[in-house]
Length: 286
Ligand SMILES: C[S@@+](CC[C@H](N)C(=O)[O-])C[C@H]1O[C@@H](n2cnc3c(N)ncnc32)[C@H](O)[C@@H]1O
Image (cartoon, rainbow, N blue to C red; front, side, top):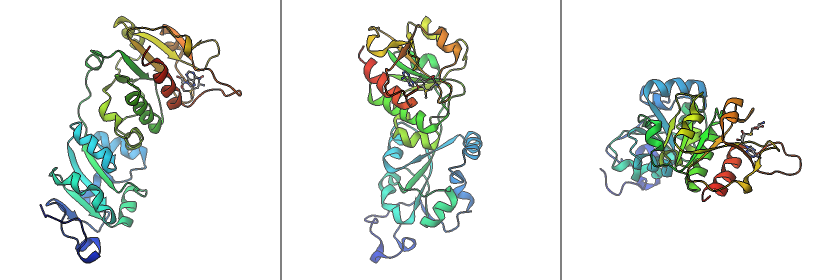
């Protein structure tokens, strides 16, 4: 590793900087095949197939990348704009993965957007734990049914982590927590909150009840129990529904109780993440 290498030599362009780490590779062409992991990051369909095929996901920003590494996700490579090299240097030093450095304009051409946080890392996915393992010691869990928006998924993980919930379960069709936007909005909480994906959507609520969870269906329906009146229980599962239609009738009917966060001014419903934040806060200690 090159020592004392963060300062550009004589303030010159990045391409003449000393290597920050042995694995640093300067690339000037956005079409270089070594950068294939980072192509079209704003194209959800492309990313879905590419990430599934190669078992990867993208982490963005030094803090989030550091949290992913600490959680045990292996790094395939790093990508950084030449003017942001310092943001990733010390993370990359101990890692041994290639660190690709591109001119800032080429990063945007490659990824499809301006990477404000400077650094990206392509990380290898790990197998999801079994639902039973995730629930083994959990007392407070959030269960997301068919959430579409990755930012909402990330925000719910962040709330669950910050407000003391133990785990998150995802319905089979719920958006991927390791999609770049979800990872970014969660600020890495997707790495710290245990989660898994439910296989049996139809039987999910009954299975949770059999495991001793009191299952609360979160709904803005005025006929539901106000959240302030929910009784204390040992094990609690909060069902949160999708952005458009909310919870499916099946999950709603199977739950032990329907619970609402009272609203005013004629508002129909809260954003998914706002509802999750309030519910986690109110019910964490109950
Ligand atoms: C945007 S809302 C869906 C609105 C949908 N029209 C409905 O009636 O459920 C998404 C999810 O956030 C939760 N939610 C939103 N507002 C809520 C409230 N006031 N009380 C309880 N949960 C709420 C529910 O779980 C809901 O399924």
